[in-house]
Length: 345
Image 1 (cartoon, rainbow, N blue to C red):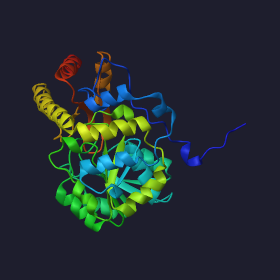
Image 2: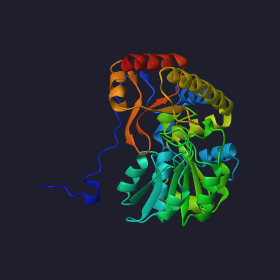
Image 3: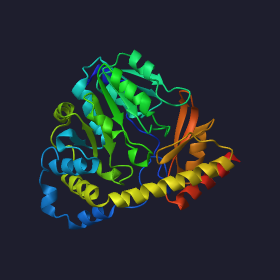
């Protein structure tokens, strides 16, 4: 007996980047500098009754904590199971199957995946030669939802303020600005969430070191937020995740900023060391660097054989093959550089 399935799903593969277990893993850009102190405390204090009951619907305490951190009213905040869940919910909230979502190319690889599983059509618009977004190209798609990641994953580059403002001023619908790496960038554009057609998403998976707890959020006009909440459903953030994220946002912002500064200092050292190997990185404002390198997938495989995992990309538009290397304590970076040197001999 053949089981029923959606025809549009049949050719969609599972998202499964190479994840060989290695002693040094710099492949996912998470915070490798330790657990936030408040998170450790909440884990110790958690009791059985807090685990066996449902959390409060729509995570009101977490919304309050995000609102305080971002300086907005709680009515302008929604949360989810990582920022990718908030992005997915946004697509469901505002786009009918068959409609178009446009985004720069390359960008966050999950965007094309989310488009497919939501029955949408994708319009990928190459970045400009200077790696800024192509505003005219994005607008020409006529897409009702325009997605921009800045700092961009996987390149680490940023969209200019002028380009973002022109995109927002002329967009036929919603602009979804993904600031997953905002805490590492020189400039945040969270204030653009005050515009009626803008949602800004962020995550606690990167600078805050809570990737395993899956907490993300969006800031925007309350009318937009209410629609995302409908698509999100009531229980996307676990009770434990909400308690930890709320405490970390309330108590550990100085800790986060110190870890982010450490990551940026290490990024500068890493760029210098890669330069000594004859490798030029793209300009990054995130906690990782992208290194254009012919044959990058094979290089990454040989590095994994030396117990180091980095992310490899093949044939990126305008870039070609490349390695993405996350920032971590320097002893891990040294191990990665050593594996890369051996590989390139």
